[in-house]
Image 1 (cartoon, one colour):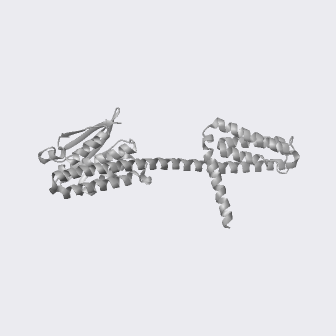
Image 2: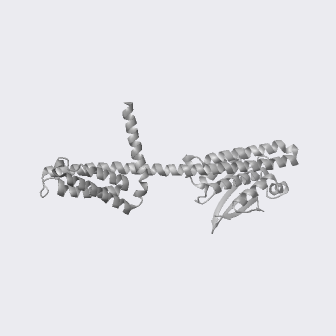
Length: 335
């Protein structure tokens, strides 16, 4: 019946809310034990006061005590109350109190089995509630971070469009190329955010994330003849810094592809991130034409370089360029 389902769902929801509300009690063991002992004392005194009226059901007030103690205090508190309840029942409520019979042994065995089932079920419930609470907190943190990142990204896009407009105003004939650059950057940002906020790969190593990001960048630029090598130690960066670092790497790779290799030339780009004392050292190296000829244009105060320097500043670093059988962009920034 529909009303029976409603009652069952309401009961489950109430149990969940109770377990969640008392989660803090399970994180304070001594307080949990104190509450558990109080619950046992109440159940024992209530059963003792009933006297012979409840001889046929000697554990009638002890089972609820075990259940509530395990729900409020956790498995160890519930187990302690179960042991105390078993000892109290054996010496006060299971007849004969001063002897031993097969009936008494069977009664105590059933008590132990029932108490164990109670503890198992309540412990599973508590674990599920704790896991759900942790996941809910994680989702809330991600949601707040997502809101923050969306606001920052909107500001970044606005500043990017302002820079693009200035470039068009200075060189109207480059309007189409400027729009293509903006489109490529926005598409890269979209792919980057899909990777960063995908729950299935939230805990993936930084190396795997950067390899996927680099593949997306090379596919977007059409530079499928260029090999990109990622050498990154097992470090974990804050999400906000990882976003900025990803945007910076995107600009550096795009710069290398555009100015270091031309005419479909094959080549290799290496991304290396090292930890030195309290700093990280990022180096993006290509084996292209080096800083010769129009490659100097790639490090001139162009739109791309303006973005690169801005992103480096956000990370607390400064880009340095060098040329030795290729070009290296190196940046030291705080860990």
